[in-house]
Length: 350
Image (cartoon, rainbow, N blue to C red; front, side):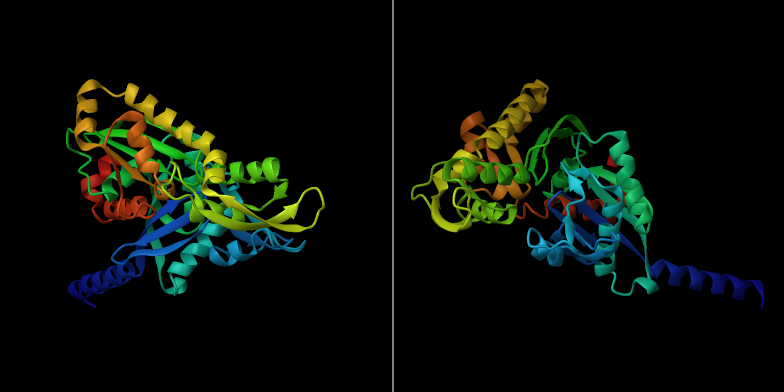
């Protein structure tokens, strides 16, 4: 074979190998994990939970495991491997990521992950950062890139983060609330507090235990928050019948609760979010503060969907507040955009 034929054969082989490798953007959250595939958009959005047998083998992940949560017997355990936005169980996180990647890549034996871009909290430590990177590599990624969640959210909102203008992003997630002021492609001031939807659920569980002697589970608390939860008083308060176990008699019981109950229960974590936003504004340079006054605060994450959350923030700090069109997917869509335009955004990656 002559040299020309050899080069053509090599080029063909490299092209085939390149087509077999995919790039993924991952929003690795405490409650949900989202995956964006280059050229396809968001291809997976499932709970960050794993069901295991006594030997530690994976039975199911995502939606299937969530259906088992709090309903298991002694031979099945459900685990959330991420707590507060970071990896709490390295081994199970790796298994979860591998299974979710397998869901996305139906023909895993025909393809592999070339690059993986993963969102991380603003306040992540070097050790936590290494845990995320190692989990992704062990799950099959060849190259791993990390990006702060608020920066990814800003890109997902369509903001030009490299311009000399101040943008304030508030991402209220499941495990953390991320707040950042971004300008010139970097974070001027950032704050991450370990408060989010999970703590609100826990507060609801504790509230109904104290006030009604009723024990409810995490899934019921989540349902209550979604159906009748609010951050501000409503014109017409909502009601809902909930079921749990009476702590006095020990038998199942149904009671009716109102949106006022929910508001009272979650007031503490919501006030903590407001305090963190105020602190971030106090630490923002005056010229960037002027930009935020003009542009307003951009609100993303699942917490943005709580009724009246934007109005509460607006009334508390007297600034415009805008909710993302798709607050649950803003971060992963921004990460996907960064992945697809890597050369333009390489400077803002960790």
